[in-house]
Length: 406
Image 1 (spheres, helix red, strand yellow):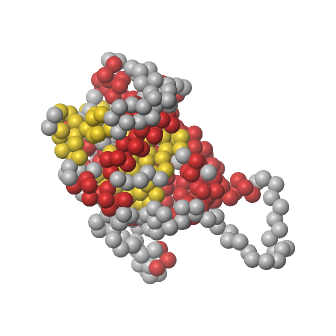
Image 2 (cartoon, one colour):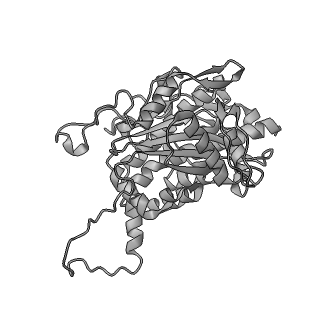
Image 3 (cartoon, rainbow, N blue to C red):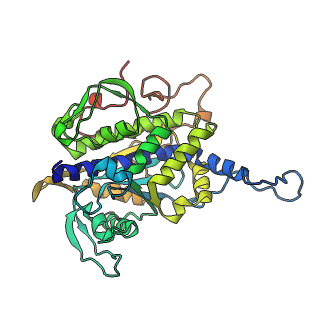
């Protein structure tokens, strides 16, 4: 395979890895705390409840981030080694970040907003500390080059993440409270641990054979881990906007996948399905490298309890407004409207249309039904609200995969 095609293929797989883990975040917050407590119970527990006197502690773990909004930066990388090479090929040297998403969890734990940053955005990159003790110079270039610059010759994930975080904070003014780096070889295990992801494609997807043979038929189907990678990384071909060969239309399709994944996770009783719960958590932890705050079991358990009641309709995908770069039609630059998005997130304000929280399930009348939504299999009519996406120009909503018309 030509070098430039191997290069693009590895980028698409890295994007797939990040998207799957963001979607699986719903699984972790729904059941991660329960799994943590269950594991604890299996380690020689001596239960003295009912035998001692004094104040009774809360049975639920505390959220160490209580009262604080969280801005979790998720970065996908095509770092080679092991199954990564089998999935994406040998590559042409150097690790890269293809997908970067900022996941904002509101301070009152009523909503989650996800903003994708296009990899080919031309931006100012600040100077960054390097693994060899030196520092890079500030420059101007593609956003995803910050990851490569920070990693240096030794491809150090910690320094790569630090440079990307510095770039995001400098550009947006949004403080990144936590981060995770996703390696692509974990994607297959995560999706397969979930039993696959059920989707409905309104038309067939056929990838250009020059980028590897891959196709999916129209209609309802369950994507396994390998199929999910193929779907998420496809850019050139026919169907579902592939004709445009655009990263921006691909973001639309990928968000539809995350929507389907979130709906499926929230519709399943994952807390009581311990085998599936443990398999998925193991797969997720094996796919990421994260800061100490996110990998601490007690902190994860507390955060999970604090946001377990967020409704799917309050999970919002916001697209960053961009236009073609004047200096290069194959690159993009952010418009002035992007500033308002970052200011709103930094202030922990809700996105337009989500100012008032939706009624909780317990607040609904006995005979009422949730509005909108698709079923756990991506089909219509189960009553689960559908995670929201901000309006965008293309493709038409009728061509977006995920929900089949009745």
